[in-house]
Image 1 (cartoon, rainbow, N blue to C red):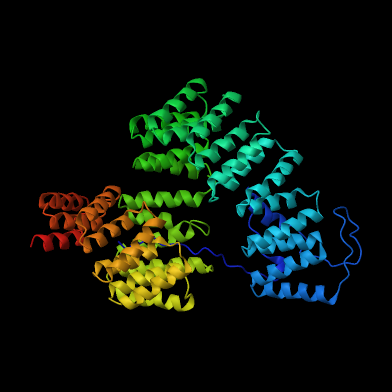
Image 2 (cartoon, helix red, strand yellow):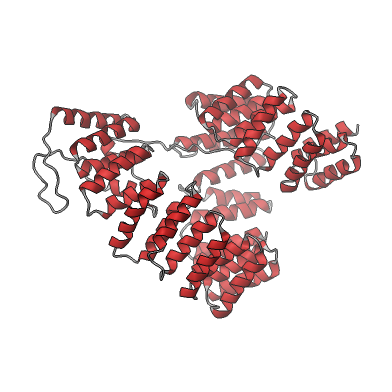
Length: 590
């Protein structure tokens, strides 16, 4: 099945006045983020001087301003100004190697990070650290970049030095390290790194928790449980340790996780975070009555705590308990919660779910500029369209106050969806096509254009767009799936269709739509027994009408008409009037 999920563009827009003023990322907790932020705090333009700096700090090299150095420096600056960060990074790293000036090395690190050139960034950070050996910032930048490159053995001595040299609690470094390692591909390597570091700090709870987290990420649950229990032995009152033990236990059994949390609460009944965790697991276990009791207890114990009320609101939404969710969210507005717009967005969604469309529209329109603005504008337009005014809905989207190209793409896609939903497929296709002329390699536009091309039977454009997307994003499972499914559905080039879908399945093995596509291409190839296994798996994971239609057709072809009719009826009861189901039933049983 051609999945509808969209992928956001990865590369941010870089706007620079000069390479020396590259926008730094906001200071974060991870070493890589620290590398970016620390580099940004360097002098805006490194001076190339013939005398050491008079102020306190590292001893700077005597640096004659040769023609070559001046030329390379200007080339790097001009490249940065023009947005050619890879060239600027190469030039700055070369300049850092030649001058051994920590200021230039620091700037080279910053620009290489911004250009996503990790190897060059490591080279620059290493020079920065060597020429400014007393700087924790250079040490953290180097360690963080080595971690990001998966060079854990090289990072180890730098991390040891960083932890030992710091005045902070060593345990805090382990917390930060866990965040840095959370998304690295080599989970086993990350676990070995944390174990080696933690071995020097056997009495620190957070060191054991860092090992436990790394082990859990690596799938080593025995090590994770052993380490988290050592942490709990050191600090029985630790909320983090109790929650992590429950998290590991929950992978196998909600009941065991509840037992861990309940036992902790018996000893420490005032623990806010553990009680919240307990309530969440109760929801997961579908023990809704007990979960509501915990919500009420939390709100009674922390009536002014906005984080507690917010958590209760979200859990109530999970339970479809709109009354409690709505009262909690409105309470947050009264208490001046940190993200008022997010609260308004949720209130709009609750009103929309209950068909109170004018009220929902008011909530969405009250959302101001910020992270929730674009979502609120799109939801508003959808309601305006539902109320019968497509022109007003489109005008509302077009008048949105955005300047970022990524946001503009989202608005185009939202407008195209409005047109598509109203049956205006060709205008939607033309709209996305016009946007592609401005941004020809935008992955989201390419995918949507391909899906619209299929609807107007422009299979040539569907294929060319998806193949271009695969070149740009070779890990985009939905691109392979959409192309493979399109071929299979038309009973064309079936070996190629299967190969494409198999690639998609490798990239996203649990995606129900891709599993469905695999079943469908097997059906087209005549492998009915294998096809039905895939389709039943897809339907079990997601009883979508199109998946149900495919499963029913295969069952019908195999002679199991009662089961095919049961699947269609079961799905039609949940999706009354669904066009795909009705067409399938009519075709199978005219």
